[in-house]
Image (cartoon, rainbow, N blue to C red):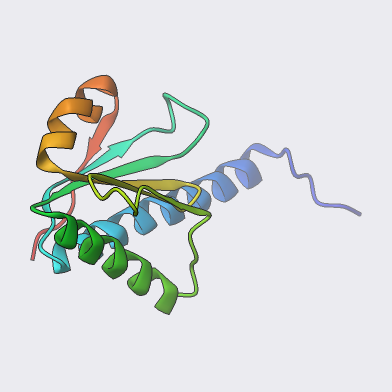
Length: 134
């Protein structure tokens, strides 16, 4: 007999595990960014606002070299956990780097670009996720 996949208990358990996994990934990404001295790290819960991702991690760097170091630190940290990006955009221009990990999208800005695009304001209805600071 096949399991009842639409049983409320099965659905709730499976959904909570999936959501926890993406939240944990967002928190790990924020930690990798912090290790590279990223500034103003913000995690936005996006799952109720858009179907494209569960979380945005937004942070800033002080220069193009700093943005590259933050992006490399995140990609290297996740690669050690055998997680590869679906896409990387903006690395040639280095005022805004976007790393797409499916359920988590990372925006790494130079401060002037972050102020110009104002993603936190654009997605102002998103829930802010607190992270533990060490």
